[in-house]
Structure formats: structure tokens, C-alpha cells
Image 1 (cartoon, rainbow, N blue to C red):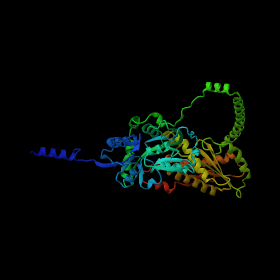
Image 2 (cartoon, rainbow, N blue to C red):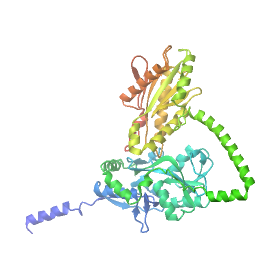
Image 3 (cartoon, rainbow, N blue to C red):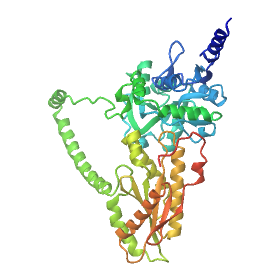
Length: 489
């Protein structure tokens, strides 16, 4: 054979796709979570999450050959990833517990988390209505654990898979289940439960999709993150459109159909039972009078509370703070104010939607309440800004309090399995005899903006004309696992 032909043959063998065999990449998924993640009747992985992973490997990570590792349920998939039988999952919830052995990519989709219950059961307007109720959720669900922490007295019934959770609710073994809106709609259709179960409420939270890899593969995580960042939005929209409708990405404004009154029936009943009609009319009048009295009291209370967070509002602060200032006599009776603000709150609203932004403010309000001492006043000042009034606290003590608030907020959102990572910036000022409420708040605000300018997620204390930063980001954030998403700070 001529030498030039031999050289050409060697080049063909060395550089052909067959000789450069792609590295196998095993993935496992939830076999029973349509339309986001499931396997079809031919045992092929389908859904928004697997299709997104397939697109990334096909178009961005061509060095890999994607191989499905089959499992019977979600719990088996988690164990397979933990034992490194599969290296990646197309969707999983980020939690502090899972960070011990899993790494998570940036989020690539999110959906409203809704409540499903039996038809005829009351609408869930407030999660407090679920106290003492039983939630059915598939084994290994971190959403169930999160709701257990948020709703006192909530009971959890673990089921082998997602379908069993719906069947348990329909059969009366559990009171409700929760799922992302597209999954809930698909499950009701798949199981033929549309006549027995219905949407009963919106949790106000969003279920965020991220890919997860075994902690032994940080390089793979970086590759997936880079591929997701460069994935065209049109491609993700195309994948989603194959499985879900635009309505599935929005919170449910109307959960069940409303039947109008049958006035003809009322007229016929009144003619047949005139005495009962008179009694009913008297009862309605009394009920309306009582309702007016109760509503008047509620309005007085609501006027002093922020409707979203339930914290006292600016109006109440403007009434109470001047009285607290008159009682303060530094240095024996000091008083300090902490101004705090959610970092990059606009980015949260833009990326996840205003409903998630509202949920973040509610969660933050809960964190602040837990840190409040007897006599402290926590107020939503406006937007994403809050004021924490601490009577009896010197500047040094208030700076320590502010750092505890910052650390508690960071830890809370780091362990949250639904909401994005959130941090806060804080500014502290101590009351000076003779200054007005507005002057004190203005100094705390100046310290807050000093924290913003110096990188956020920190505390600044106003001592003189210029605030001095005394606390910076703690080591906990820098010690996060490689690939864990940076906070929206």
C-alpha cells in the first residue's frame, strides 16, 4: 500500500467519531412525575427535565454519551445518585441536607406549587388551615419536609410514588397533596381523578428545577452550569411547550368554578315557606350587623399591619417610635435602629416572578420575628426594606443583633428547598439625645447604603459622620460546595 494511503487511513482511524468514543454519562430520573420528569410506556425518559438534559449533552457536551439508569421510583433514583450508579439527575430540589452529597446547577425553570384536595373540601386561602391535616407525598420529597417546618402540626404520609399520593387523597387516607401546577394537572388527567380531586389553593411558593450531580463530580457540574447558561431561551421554551401550557407557569387565580344562585328556586321556596323567609331575613340582618361591627375592628387592626408580611407598617412606626424616643435616655437607656434591605430584590422579581418576591418577603418577615426580643419592634418600612427598633440596645449591642439577623437570614434561605438564595444588607444607628425620628432613621439608612456599596450581605454601624463597616460576609458562604449557586446578593 502506498505510504500516502496508509497515512490517510491512520488519520481516519485516529480522528473519526468511532475512534473517539464519547464518555458514558449515566442519569437517573423520577419515573412518575409527568410532565416534568417521567418514563413513558416504552421505559424511555420523557419530560421537560430529561429533554433539557438531552439537549445540553447533544449540543453543548458532546464529549458525553447519555445513558439512562432505570429505577422504579424517586427514592431509588436518589439512592442511585448517592451510590454513584448514575452521575446526574435532570431535576432535584436544593436543600442543606442534600448539599452534603449532591451539587446543584443554576435553576432553569420554575412553576407554582399548588394544593390538591378532594372536591367539596374548603378552599385553602391560608396555609394555617392545613394545621393538623395529613399531606401525602412520595418518599424522599424535600417539599414535604419543608412544609412540615412551615405548618405546625402537619402530618406526612409517605407514598411509594407520586401517583399513590393522589390516590391516597382521593381515598380519604390523606387530606391533600402538593405539586407543581403542570404535574398536578397531568396527574388528575392520568389517574382519572378530575371528578374527585381539584385545585384547592396556591402555596405562594414556586418549585424550581435544577440539575443535580454526585458530589464526586464537580467538573461535570461546572460543565452543566456553563451549558445551561449558554442554552438559548427559545430552546427551553420549545421543550416546555411540548409538555405544558402557559397557564401552568402562572398562579391559579380561580381554583374552582363558582355556581351562581338559582333565583327561581329561591322564589319558589319563599312562596311555599313565608314564615321561614321572615326568620331567614331577620337572621340575615342580624348577621350583617355583626359582620359590620367585626369588620370595623378588623379594619382598625389591618390599618396598622402590612398586608403581605403581617408585620406592623410604617404608619404604626410613625406613631410608636416618637414615644420610644422620649423614653430613651442614653447611655443608661439607649435605643438603636437597624435598617435592612433585601439584596438585589429586583433581580429576584425579574428572574422568578413577583409571586416569588412576595414569598421571599414573607419568609424574611418570619426570620425577623424569631430574632425579635421582648419590647423590640419590627416594621416593614416599604418595598423590600424593614426597620428593627431595639429599645435598650446600645450601638455595639445592636450591631451584634444585626449580625445575628444577617446570619439567620442567610442560613434560612440556604436551607430553603423552594425559594432562591437570599441575603440582606443592614445599617445600624443609635439614638442621640435631641435628634428626631427622621434623623435617626436617615443615619441608619446611610449605614445601610454603606453596606450596599461595600459588597452587600454585611452590617455597617453609624458611629460618626460616616458609617464604618464592622461585619462582613461570614465564612459559611465561602465554604459552600463547588457548584452551589451563588446567592442573589
